[in-house]
Image: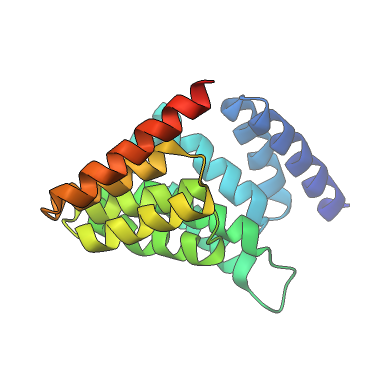
Length: 191
């Protein structure tokens, strides 16, 4: 039936997307969405495929933003089989799309929502810190970067970004100590 065919198209799209073929994934998602217009994974893959290709520019990202918003709603709907992990990933993609279309301030809420759903995600914490930094919110940036560094103590980038946030606040001594810690971490990771 239609639901089985939609699920199979979605599974093929997922494999193609994970294999680095967003164009192929988008084609299978289009077929899946014809059969099941509210398939959250295909809405996500189709939108992210548009973000990573020239199709983004066709409508300034409006379709991708709408698809991601719908995917998030479906993933967070308690009455359905929602997935907080997939909702977090969709929020992250939505933040990227909004940031690209309208600027950092527009993507902020979506990145914060992604981080709230996946608080231990290094990628989400670093992106939230970056957004805060771009918006001049250096105390919040420091907090996001510091949380990433605590959750991922071997990640030099999180430590470096914590130092950058401290430096931007004028706290040169703390920034220097943080950079030295990052340098020691970097040297130990090189071994």
